[in-house]
Length: 118
Ligand SMILES: [Zn+2]
Image (cartoon, protein in one colour):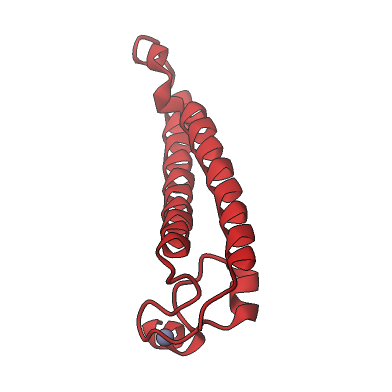
């Protein structure tokens, strides 16, 4: 079984938009990272400022990693739309529940495989 072309088309458009949003988010996160500001290398920042920058940096890295993960998932889902395997569990090949895909269109495992993976 396969999803009709028009369904896949709208899924793909949705994923494409999601990818664009995530890419924008990555760029703005990179700008928010205090370590991205090269002028900080020359300033005589106090320890407090230094600590705040460390914190800000750690947060920016975490958020950026999360964004990269989501981006990867979205791109993999787009690839599956492309090669006609979208909606199939990558592990067992069963169709993934449409409710599940409705909640997370990038889901790559069926419910039972996802449970086993935990
Ligand atoms: Zn499965």
